[in-house]
Length: 233
Image (tube, rainbow, N blue to C red; front, side):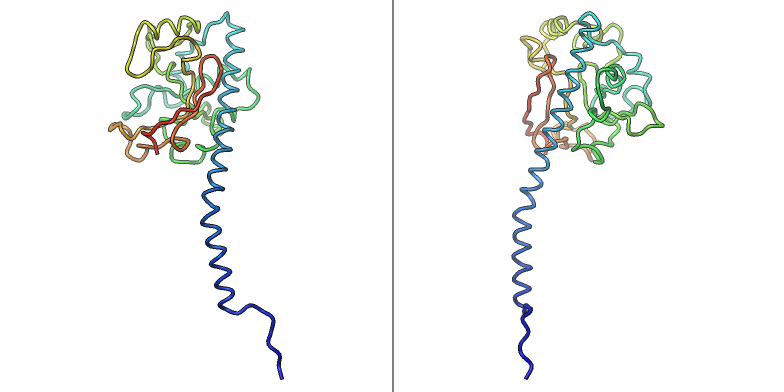
């Protein structure tokens, strides 16, 4: 007589598959959260390197911030090549060119979480330096260098010392930023974000941000701070 084989029965296989499916459903969000946490940390390190590069630039240029309003207008696409939100152009392609002697890798100008996403390819976010080299693109925002006006607006920092930049913000209060007490309160660079509360923001981007629930911010003294924002998904 033929003896019964030692393989799994169909029911046993179905039970194993069900257990694996349950484990995957439980663990996948945990792994995704861990991956995003690692990317957020990498993003903070990128911004920290940008801050260090700006500090070295200040040392070399008599403590004055760059004034490259010419680059603001001249980079591919020109100034603010969109008609929706934001109302100015906070992209920082100009900074990548000015600070290139002080950084090791161009990749620091993009957060790992934004590359290859709808947000990362948006015209309001991505700024190419050279159309023949698509990898040379920036995806951070610098709101205090967002307009090429002449004279320099009080809330823009072109050519100013950090102390003058702070003084101008203090003397010109605005609902869009808190009154700073010093350079540690002044934002230099930030992850892109499109608040869902702004009706003029593009529909496909409204509520989107690089990181879930907030963004990394680089301040004028070089430190990094995480800001929670309930206006983003």
